[in-house]
Image (cartoon, rainbow, N blue to C red; front, side, top):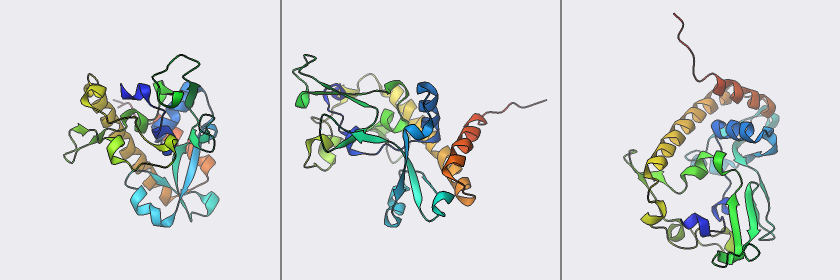
Length: 219
């Protein structure tokens, strides 16, 4: 699969948006406090209209509700590519030391939380088509603008159907889950932004909201 010979460009180039589901799943699985891995990224006013199509935006009283924020995984400095950032959970190894001569840039990069990675990561680069019933895979190698720094470029080659052979069923299930979770998170944002509080209050808010998504019908 193409991801096995990639330097993790998507984990370097983009901030990874997370839903409440992702946040709580990572926190529970890794037993980490939410603020230790989640970053609230401020959104400029002229970016709101574009970003809210892909991201879920929130307001907080810490900033007097003047700004919108998106929730993303934190980034850290890359040791393999000095002067660049990477997702804090992206692991890097020197492929030469580990005897992987076929690897690009002599670098092995792997997700350190693959089992509980965010839904955005699990579905990338797959999206729904216009009908909303079928998935399709736009080729990041050819469709994404090339960057001057090699760390920020996506995919070492064009992707093919062989790269995703055998995983169509799991992929469409994950896409469906992502669509549901984003819809739920947007509904939470709409409610929250009408009655915003501090960022610390928000973490309690999502824990309560997600723990009460299923209720018993009493007779």
